[in-house]
Length: 170
Image 1 (cartoon, rainbow, N blue to C red):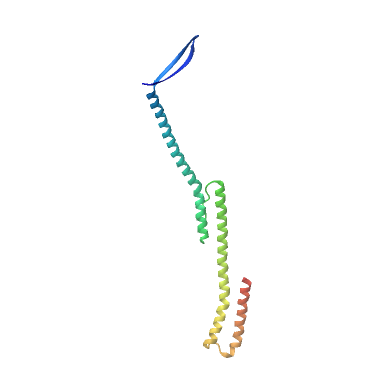
Image 2 (image 1 turned 90 degrees about the horizontal axis):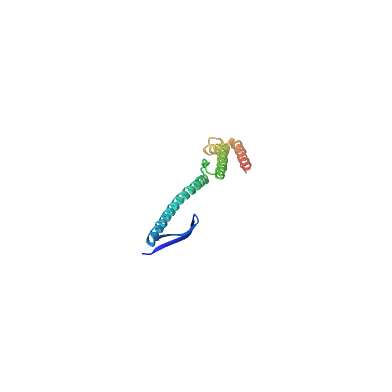
């Protein structure tokens, strides 16, 4: 068998000498192999744990961004009630708050637009109903021919009113 031998000069109480230690090469190789195996296994476990922690951290960072993105898609699709949860780091929370404020303003604008369109429809419908009634009355004979001039004057006034309404909208 082969041996590894290590020695050192020592001084004990004024006496000088040499101290030697020997170990079989095979035993030292087994010991080094076991240390290397433990190092590799520990490294693998550390890599797996670090990978899991990175995935959890990445998910924690990207989740608020995904929520804001989904809310933006809903808002873009016309759902003005869409809001993003105010979570995550301060920058993302500020971004979500700004997004929600914008969505609220868009919702108010959409509501105002709906009310405006309803008012316009009502304002246009009133003179159109009068015009239609007079014309239908003339066509079906309900209004006598002797009064056509009067009712055509009313139709002209209502048509002028419609023209002014349309002009004011522009």
